Every structure is written in structure tokens, then in C-alpha cells.
Image (cartoon, rainbow, N blue to C red):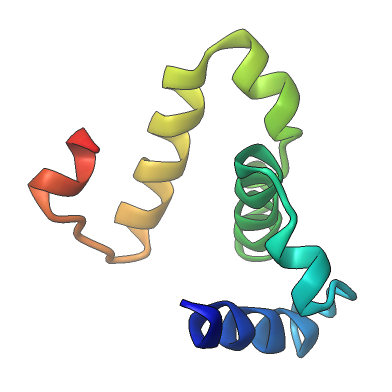
Length: 86
């Protein structure tokens, strides 16, 4: 798991993301903060994905989940059915 997180952090520090978090800071992020990182990455591809995840989750976690799942589906990712029920 640590190597996976290290790889993610290294990729996020490079182009086009240019994020400044190190491994320690990234590993301390809450689940909502990690969703914000994903949402920020989505926004680099599509400006309509630029959202404040905290506000969106406060209004409707279901809508947040649906938005993110719809976007990764548009990108061509096909989640396994069992992944949707975790």
C-alpha cells in the first residue's frame, strides 16, 4: 500500500497536477480530502467538474457519488459491480 501511495504522490507532483503534498501529508488526508484531490484532477480535464466536495457532500452524498462515477465512466473506466456496493 505504501508503494501505491508513494506512486500516486509522485504523479500528483508532476505535470499537469503540480500538487505540493508530500507522502506524509497525503497519507494524513481524510476521505473527503482525498475525494477533493480526485475532483481537482477531474477539473483539469473538464471545468464542469470543479466543485467543492465538502459543500457537495453536505447537500447530497448520493449526487457527489453519481457525479464522480458518471465522470469516470465517461473516461472509460468500468468499475466491477461488487465495487459499487462497498
